[in-house]
Length: 118
Image (cartoon, rainbow, N blue to C red; front, side, top):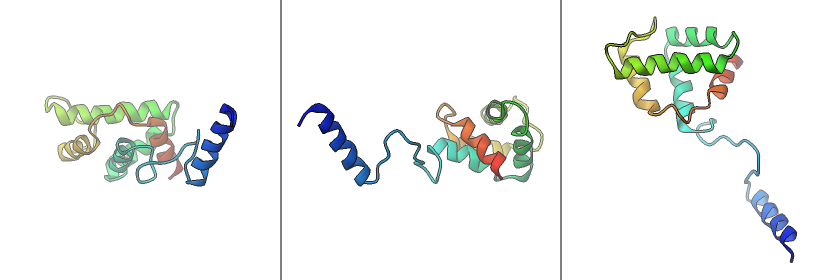
């Protein structure tokens, strides 16, 4: 068996096992990772936060606008001197920060698309 045949056999075996090769496959409650899921969950958990998030996804660069909004909330959760965005309680901000943890793995496009689809 040559190298090309070995690769083909390995890909066929992976597909037979249900693995996807080079395709998106949700890994955490339908989301790409836990952080993305947690951000989406918290944006939809409180009516005032959800209402702002839904407005943000209507404009240009919705993923960037959502990221900035969540960063504001997280900053206020960490530093009490930071002002909270309107409609966000200190408790909601702290819960979000505790559940999400780090923002570096969040798929902001997926979060924005999830909000826009609702």
